[in-house]
Amino acid sequence: MATVQKYFDLFHDKIKLGRFDEEDTLRDKRRIVREKLLANLPGVFEKHKEKNLVPTFRDQGSYAMNTGIKPLEGDFDIDQGVYFESSVTDYPDPVVLKERVHEALDGHTKKVEIRRPCVTVFYQDGYHVDLAVYSCASANADKQDYLAMGKVGSEEKYRVWQLSDPTALTDKLFERFDGDDTGRKQYRRVIRFMKRWKDVNFVSSGNGAPRGIGLTVNTHDYFQPNYDATSFKLDDLTALRDLAQAMLDAFTSTWVFAEWKFIRRLKAQLLVTPFNDVYEKMTSKQMETFEAKLQELCDALNAAIKEVDTRKACQLLRNVFGDDFDVPEESETARPTPPPVSTHSQSA
Amino acid sequence: MTPNLESTSPLVYQLSDGRRIKLTAEVVARLQRHAQHAPDAAEAGGVLLGRYLSDSDDLVVDDITEPLPGDKRGRYFFHRAQKNHQQAIEQAWRASNGTRTYLGEWHTHPEARPTPSCIDTCDWRRKLRQDQYFERLFFFIVGTHEVRGWSGSRNRPKPIALEPLLVS
Image (cartoon, each protein chain N blue to C red):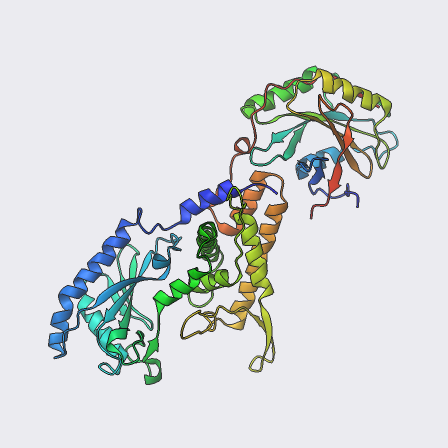
């Protein structure tokens, strides 16, 4: 096997979105949004003759899990939980509370939009902040957090308070690795590699691409750490190949009456309430593409494992992971040798 | 299964210690062009150039020299002169900061599954003593249906056959 771990290390350094390092811009945007909300919400609630609610904030998503990657097109995003101390009965229509948040931030940036699971603040420079609005546990009789779902104008059945516990999801996703720091480290790396593979190989709009959280759940379900037990040296290549193969093996056929054929699907079931399949909105056609591209990934990883030449192996990996995967010059892959001298030769 | 000479896939062989040596597809194609299919085709030969990989113990042959002025060729013999081939070796070595080096010799035989003659093995032993090389030398014979390889070192001058590995 070509030993390409060094190049996986370089790749990881390039794509990793550090939680505490250079992403000052993201942290600034998050801070500004928090400050704007705290400053403007009292006025908004007063205008609507409602009780003033002071929100608290929690980091969510890949940023909180430390599995974030740099986006290809500079479309950085950050997920922020906004928790209100008001019960689901205080605001029977969750969209109303999202409208208050929208109103407090409107005009602050290029665009603020209410989307089904969040309120999104778009910035001119391509950054955006997704605000998930919650009714917090302490205000509810059942002591559970609820997420405000729905948009202005959507039907009543889509405007719901959905039981949601992102902190518990993060805990569940990582509890497998309690006591295995090296395994956890490799788990985060592999999640990042899979997410970058997705960004490079799928068109980003709509449900065409498997969502990052889906790939994260798949990695939780099927990844096995692969490192040397004494030196703790990682083998990301083999770990990724085994993951891709296990995911392919997990596709199952189901008969779909509406299409009158068997469809192969992979599931990514959330580990916490509402326990839905993250991929449920993907169409049969999109699932077919997902499986085919996953097979291409697995084939490329197998070819890289078989390849003797480090440079060739890196070229194969660059084909599936994109241009941030370095391909070394031939001279970088070889040991310098003393000056060679070959005498004549004769053969028969 | 024997490697098929008609294809231009790379060839990979394994040494007895598990290390691997790969002949790139381009090198295999160039070797194939000298295979002695025609009844009057003369033997050909040259040197192997390539890399000792730094991240593993494997090697890659990614260039060769082919018969040059000064070499003598017959149906059943090939005498390679030193000067022109040594120049090619030095040039490759210098251009790569010492990372592309002399790895051994190749020549052709007008037989399907080639085996080294006494002259071949004697000369290999002499080269293992007299040449200046890094760690070991490889010797490949290009037959009409198969390319076979052997390897030896200063301490183990009896060349040992390489085991061909299947590559898809």
